[in-house]
Length: 457
Image (cartoon, rainbow, N blue to C red; front, side):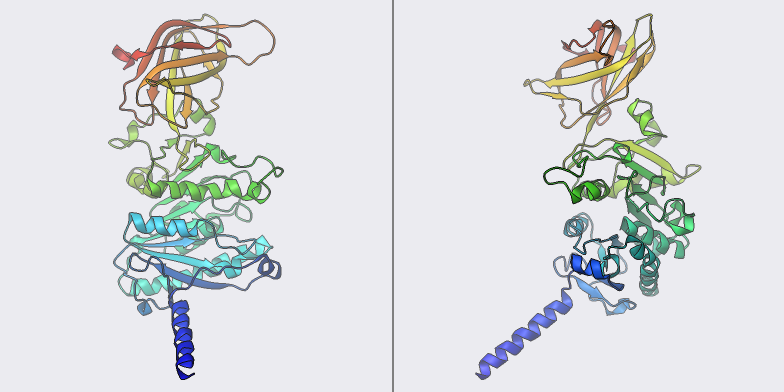
C-alpha cells in the first residue's frame, strides 16, 4: 500500500512538472466564445532544444527562461480573432517549419483567452493591451542583450495589427513584421497609428488574400503581395452551399495567406511575384520586367522576401504592390510564361488565346490563368499571360486557339508574323518561336516551335 501511494504521488508530481514545462496553446470551445473570455496572454517558447515541449515564459521576466538565447533571432507568432476558441490549424506546422529553416527563438503569443468571443469588436478592443504586454516583455529581452533588429513578428489578421502596435512603440526599429491578411473590419480607413503601417519595422511585408471580405484592401507594408488579385483564392468555396463548404466559405480566402507563407518555408518551389500597379496590368503582361532587381529576380513570396529589403525600402515612396497567381493546392506554385504576338492584320483584333504545351513524352497541360482579352494591332507586340500548374523543361509542341467569344457574327483570322513563348519562372531558358502562320477563330492550331532567332532571343 505504501508503494502504491508513493507511485501515485510520484506520478502526480511528474504530471504536474510536465504540465508546467510543456504548456500547450489554450484550446477553448464554442461555449467559451458564447460566454466570452477575459484576456490572458501566454508566451510559449520553442527552440531547437525544446521543439516538442514549450517553455512558458514569465510575462515580464526573460531571465527565468531556460532556453531563450537573446543573441539569436526571435520570432513572435501572433494569431487573430478566434470565433470558436479552437487552436489555429496551422500553428504546429509553422512552428516546425520555422525551426527547421533557422536556429531561432520561436514565441507563440497565445491570447486565445481574449480573442475567443462571438463579438469580433470585443477582440479588437483587446489588441492594444496584447501589444502593451509584448512591449514589456521585449523590454526585458533588450535589457539582457537582445537587439530590436533581431526581432521578427508574424501576425495573422488581428495579430498583424498587434505587431504593428508593438513596432510603433519602438519607433519602427523592430527588424521585420509580416502581416498575413491583416484584418480589415474596424481598421479600414483608420490612420497609420491605429493599424499596421510601413513605418512599424525596418521591413514590413504583407500578404493580402481576402481584400473583399475579412482582409485589408490597401497596402500596409514596404511590399504588399496580392495572390490572385487578393480576392477569390483557387480551391476555396465560391458559395456557402454544398458539401464540405459552410464555414470554409468564410475563412478559406482569409486563411490562404498563412498557407502561402508556410509554402515558402517548405521551399518546394519559390513563388515569384511581379511588382505592378494593378492586377489588371499584371494579367495584361505589362509588369514582367525584373531587370530592376538584378542580380536577383523579381521578389519571391513569404519568409525569404526580405532578401529584396534593400531595394524595396530605398524606393520613393518605399512601398511596392506585387501580384501573382497560384494553383489551388499546396504548394500553390504556378509556372508562368508570356506568349508574345506580332500580327499583320490591317484591322485591330481583340480576343483571347487558349494555350497548351506538350513535352517530348506527349504529356499536355493547359494554361489555368484566365488572362484579360488582348488587343492585336498591326506590327505591334501583344502579350498573353499563361500560367500552368505543372512545368515542362523541354516543350515539343504548342497549341493555340484564338477566340473573340462572340456567339454571332463572322469568324475572324489572326495573321501571326511571330509568336514567342518565354518562361518568366525560369528566364534563363531558351525562348521558343514560330513565324508566319494563321489562327482561325475557335480552331486549335498545333505546331512544333523552334528556338528564337536574332532579336527575338
